[in-house]
Image (cartoon, rainbow, N blue to C red):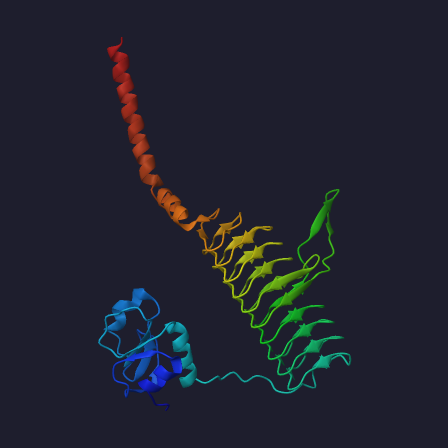
Length: 348
C-alpha cells in the first residue's frame, strides 16, 4: 500500500497546504465515496456542501475561499492537481505493444524510426514515415506518403489514408478514420457526380483524437487540427475545416466544410456547425447548439438557431410559458367577445 504525507502531495501539485502536513494518505476517491485515509477534490462549487460530510482525510480545492474543517490543499486547478495524485496511487496499467509484429505488413519503402512498435495485421504502405517511440497497435492502416511523428499512440482499427501529416505526441483512439474523402458532389442533370478530394489533413503536436472520429481530407489544400486540441468520441470534421490550438470538441459535434475555428474554442456535445463560418478565439457553442452564423471571439451561444446564451435563455423561458400564455389569450379573447356583445346591445 502506498502511503504519503499531505505535505508530499502539496509539493507534488504545487499547492498551498492548510492543516496538518503529517496526515498519511493511502488512497484517492470521489468526494462522495472517499473514506478515512483518502484524499479527494472539489472542482465544482455545486458540491461544496459535501465538504463537511465527506469522510476523506483531506481535500484538494481551488484557491477560492471554502468553509471546511478538513485539511485542504489549495491549487489553481484542483481537477488537474487531483489527476497528478491519481497517477501517484494508480500507475499507468496499459501495456502497449513492443517491437514489430511479424504479422504486420510494412513496405520496404517505409521509414521506421527507433523503438517503434507495430502490432499484428497492421499495414504500412510505401513511403510512410513513422517517428521514434511511436506505437501503432494492430489492425491499423497507414496509407502511402503519410508522415507520423515521434511518441504517438495509435490504437487498434485506426485508418490513416494517404498523404496525411501527423505531429508528435498525438494520440488517436480506436476506430478513427483520418483522411477519408470529403463529402463533395455536384448535381449534373439530376445525377450526383463525385468531386475529387485531392487535399490532405494536417494534425499538429499534442492533439488527442477520441474513438470513431472522422476527419475528412480537403477538397484542395488541407483540413487542419491545431496543436493541443482535444477531440472527443464520435466527432465529424468535414473537408477544409481549420481548427486552432487548444480547442475542445466534445462528443457528437459536427463541423461542416470550410469552417474556421479559432484558438481555445469549445464545441459542446452534439453542437452542429454549418459550413463557411468562423468561430472566434475562446468562443463556446453550448450542447446541441445549431450554429448557422459566425460566432465572435469570447462569446457563448446556445439553442437552435444558436443565439448569444443570455438571449437563448430568455427565448427558452418564453417557450416554456407558451401553455400559460395560450390559456391567457383565450381568456382575453372571451372577455373581448363579451365586451363587444355588450357594446352591440348598448348601441342597438
